[in-house]
Image (cartoon, one colour):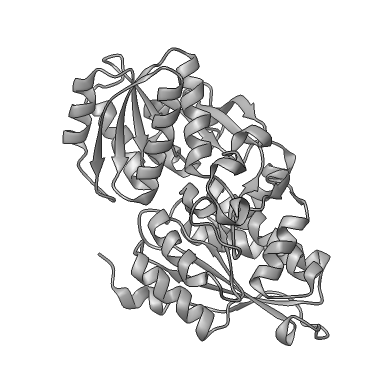
Length: 405
């Protein structure tokens, strides 16, 4: 769909901070960061250019704390293809000497990048992907996984619905690593709580016609039709579910990953009532609102998604750790990220566990009705705060070799 040369030519250096005296461990007193994201495809709205802006804002805030380092920021489009993402990562590591790769939406791309980065001097600070394998069986000493994962999303949303006696489920699942993991994690919750899985169907990414998948879900008569997909696929499946009358027939939709940009694309008249789990919402408090205003000033009024917020917070914590360690070596800096508690205005206080999972509160939201919304991008009402200690998979259950060996 996209030309492969486009992503390979997309790296653009941006000088962001003032220069200063050289340090002993950071070569040329410079840290090089690269936002590897989807700049033109399915996730361009929820990650993409907004992730680049979020990284710039993190650098700007780090500058106020540590003006003696120079930071270069690059960006590239992986086009949602694992081979292109891996190729770009190799070039950044071998040729451009990038110290940290940021974002990387789409789990299949992130898993490929993780293997390229493993054992190198480059860190991987993942915000865009959801697969819990990044901190499970595929964990790496080079990687920190920031914003969310399939375990957290599945448990947050599924448990709430099961408590409300919504106990029969049908899955409409994106046919790639993220979708498979999300369905698997949610299915485990449903079964553990005495619910039943009535069926599932898998669809290709960037699908335009969900009719056959939704008709199967409708025929199942499941109380919950769970959408184990993301971005444009979630938008299209929610819109078409409304057209087919699933909700009117008594079924409910659970969007297992939804961003504010998705709600904006769908519209409150259709998205109203949906439950979702997020790690960040722009209108949560004064700190998130202030960041959202800075972000919107560079993004034509758009409010940041949780993925973009995670790029900001992960970048800021990485830079603080690199400065504290006086090093750009990936494993040294990641170890320092695990040693230092994290604190920022978007996620509050948190920590990075031994498996690389950043732990923070998660939140169960419900999408407002049009009457409840008082302003543009006023989409969510808080249903429940999920404490950090409960929000993510227990570390001993992930199978991470760094933990269990």
